[in-house]
Structures are given as structure tokens and as C-alpha cells.
Amino acid sequence: MTDWTTRIPGRDIWRIGLVEAAIGDVARNGFPPDAPICWLAEEGGLKFLADPFGLWRDGRLHLFAEAYDYRTRKGVIEALELGPYFSPVRRAVVLEEPWHLSYPQVFEADGEVWMLPEAHRSGMLTLYRAAEFPRVWEPVVRLPLDTPAIDATPFRYDGLWWLAYSPTGPQRWKQGRLHLAFAETLTGPWRLHPGNPVRIDRASSRPGGTVWIEDGLPRLPVQDCTRTYGGGLRRLTILKLTPNTFEAEASAPVDLPSGVGRYRHGLHTLSACGPVTLFDVKRIDRSLWPAR
View 1: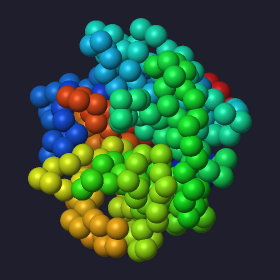
View 2: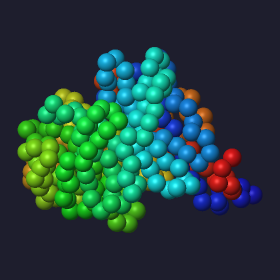
View 3: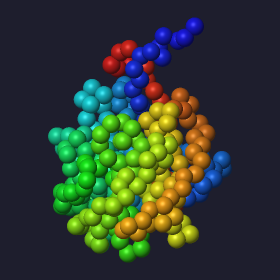
View 4: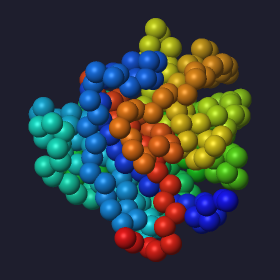
């Protein structure tokens, strides 16, 4: 007999973890068995933290994440300052807009700290600069593209800034198409890659973390959404990348880390923070009530 609870629409609930291993090692070899996972506490009810990105300051890791509550159905960006053993010592909402925010790509460039959060429901992609790190952020420029970008991921390669993102539209586009843009400077002007969408594959197109350069080639974590949204991650190695060309190949899925427990339904962000890699895993909640 089929379990009747499987017929209830599921809610994705995410949990953030950290491992002391380089992102390239995790993406290539999986989570190392000799490096323990540090888990952030569960949020409880129908809340979660997801999409972790981070920067180090004065020997402490500042972790930025989407904070989501199903009762409001709007994400905000929170910053968590982690102390010894990666335990949170401070936590605050650092960016809130009238629209949903997620995927807070935080990075350093040109002597500044920047944030590029996902905000496609606003109809635009806005680049923010830290006016007072980590709590005060000011909008600097809107990046006009061919679509309100989803999970926009910036990186430097071969003298240019690049932006990898997925388009709005049907779910098969959001989860299975990859677009690119490029610019000489971070604030633009940005130009569209003529091959957009440069990749169509629900198993390896939607960005899922930070890009790193290995053996001279960019490596991008991409989501595998063939079973469920954020169901897994693969490493997309970009073999050729110019303003007119693109060629890439995807790896096998990255295995889940040990100790995920009920969070066994997905893995959809892998981000580098020096010697630490941040990630999130998913469980599907099919409870009948809004809170427990």
C-alpha cells in the first residue's frame, strides 16, 4: 500500500554544514571521511537557512545565507559570525527587500566587498557593496541581462568578469538552462554570450555555488534537478570559454556527506571559503500543519 503522506505536496527544508576541506577536493573526491562535518542547528518549524557563502575577517568566518520562513514566503539575507568550532556568536538580518532574496554570493574585488543576491522576483539583478561589513549593504548598480538572472555566479577568467546564471521562465528553464554574460569591469557594461543558453541539461546547468580555477580551467558547481529541485550537485568543468565560444563537461554527482540523517533528499550549494567548504542538504517536509 502506498503511504498516503507521499501525496501531500512537500516543502523543501534545508540545513547548512561546513567541512574543513577545499572545494576542489570535495567536488572531485566527495566529502572526506576523516574531516568531521560541522552542522548549523536546525531552524525549527517551517524555517530554514540555505545557500551559504562566506568570508573570513580577523580569524572568524562570516557566513551569509538565505533565511526563509514558509509563513511569509519571502527570503532575507542573514549573516552569522562563527566563533571557535564554527559555533555562531552573532546573527542578524543584513539585507531585506520587498521581494524574495536568496543565494547571497559574497566576494572581494577591487578593494571592496560585494554581494550579488538572487532576486529575480524584483525583475532585476542588483550588485551591492558593503558600506559597513558585514551588516550594512548599499545597492551600486543593476546588471541588465537577457533575463532576470537566477543564482547568478560571478567569476574572473582570462582577463574578464563572467556571470553564469539561469533564466526565468518554466521550471525546465530555471532548472535546466545555463546563460553567460561577460564584462571588462564588475560594474559593467555586461555583454551577453551569443550562445545563450550555452547549456541545456536539467542534470548540470543551474549554478550551485562558487567557481574555482583548477589546472587553468573554471569549475562551476551545478545542480542536478532531474529527480527534484536541488537533488544533487555536479562539477561542471568549462573547457573553452571566450566571448564567442563555450564548451563544458559535467562530472558524476557528488555523494552526500555522512550524518545527513533525514536531510537525504538534496544537495544544492557548494561554496568555497578558504580552507572551508560550505554546503546545504535537504529534507522534504510533508506535514499537514504549518508548524510543529
